[in-house]
Image (cartoon, rainbow over all chains, first blue to last red):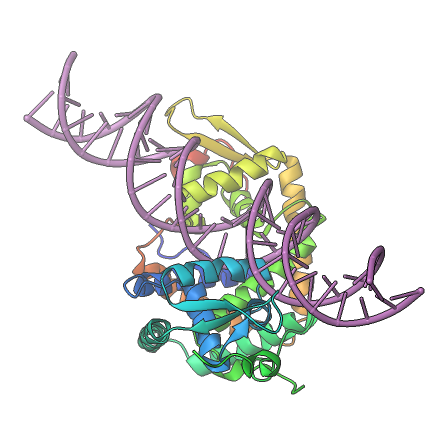
Length: 162
Length: 162
DNA sequence: CCAATATCGTAAGTATGCTGACTTTTTTTG
DNA sequence: CAAAAAAAGTCAGCATACTTACGATATTGG
């Protein structure tokens, strides 16, 4: 019974896909006790850095389609991790904001992620660098997205009275 | 409009998830003209290396659940890229085999993947090494899977030629 | 001013993955 | 041998993501 599957010869696409899926599974396992999923954590984390923001903006920052973000937000809202309210200035818009419970859950999630990663026998910094290059390059080709730091200007000032 | 989103501070889980998703999107774009998806290519590629094999085995090798593999195979079968037949020896089993059209499509898919990857400004070998470590480690934790080379013994006798 | 146009969000349908429950068939065991 | 356990696949339901299409609400331009 030979030891290893022939991972050496896997195409790189299969390697990347499999790595991401296994990592997401492990991540979701540890998140389950907090009541979150990986998609939710990412949305909350962006929200914590931007303040209240529209769904469309949030989707562009996370680089998913607006519809996908809508579903993720539906679940986060059902768990009271976020709130939505119509903008008085533009009634097409829903401003999404983090609740206290959401901020709490997010912080626990990020903490547990770091713990999990620190146990992996890889050079995290080098690995992150390669991923960053890959994301930047692939994102560039699919058309640039919103800026995570600035894109909030237009909406964030309007509604910070919760 | 400042240049880059704050990718430096992304949690590693978000980096890996996003990289994989963007890569899969790009991959699927190039696969669309061949009539395949990334999941289909992976299944076909394994099938080409093992010869006829059961769905359960295939799922273990690819490291997805048997149900997931079943769906992928449904689509591949609908496009005549694979064939299924009941084993006469064990009627629970469906032996999955590559059709000529499937082998053809797979070869074109692998070729186009290599071309796409060669254009990326990263050190593919180093990157692959980190992914391999990650896959092996995460796979080990979730319980070892089938061996891609050997697990075929019992079923492959019908169509083995590599 | 009102009709095009653009923007924000939602809905429907599909693909990929997961879990849990089920049927059919084989194997094990009392 | 019959009952129980195990194994292979499928079905149903959910989560994440994509595409295409649509409704509601601005904005713009004739």
